[in-house]
Length: 349
Image (cartoon, rainbow, N blue to C red; front, side, top):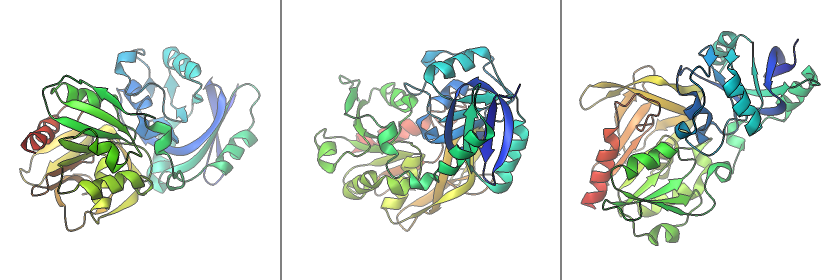
């Protein structure tokens, strides 16, 4: 019995099976990862999106909280070919609508052909196609979520590894994955996690050795305060950024960003270092990219598939950013040395 519907742009409605009831809407995107579903589902960069898994079976090794990247499921809804009972139960407990028993290959192909789409989902005993279409009609483009940072950032500053002997890092939380904090703490850094709208005075109060802009969801142009922080501290502090953080740094220094057609989401994105010609495999989750880095930043790494910038640097200013996730939970771990390089800049400062 059909008890769920997925409506996509063009008002096409796809029948499905309800695994977690409710109605929701968001940008329909896909990930190619075949492991790491717990990490993906708790990644704040998926806020305001409907996450489609291209791998057919999701949940085959259970649900373990120690793998979570945040304290809740972040996507607005979940679409899969087959969700196990463990994952379906978790999503019901979280109140996140989820559906399966539909052709995710068809959905992924459509996204690749037409780009990420607005989407409406309705799941449960009494829902109709009209419910899904009504959600679709109310769905916004990602750029219209102008204060999305407030949905994923901590409300007040928090400190990790207060007695650490390493550099002091001011990490601006635009939707930071927990593994970024863990990667810094493992290297004995003192990490002050600051809200996405922290001021210059907030940062200065911690006397940091490094300003670090985190990953996060949505359009980097909507993170105005983070842009201002970079502009204020450039040439005063070393600056690092991951994912959205790279886009924010580039934008603040005169570069340009743009929406990608369907983004990079998965654990098998190849990246080439232009200085060494070495290729590493990376984990990625982003729908925006740097279109033009401007005159202050050098492109040091590119995506092998489409040549989009994956690494930006300025040795004189002490700036180093990555579009991918070097902390890479669940993997691969080819690029973990990024954190060593970043903290070396902070120690020099």
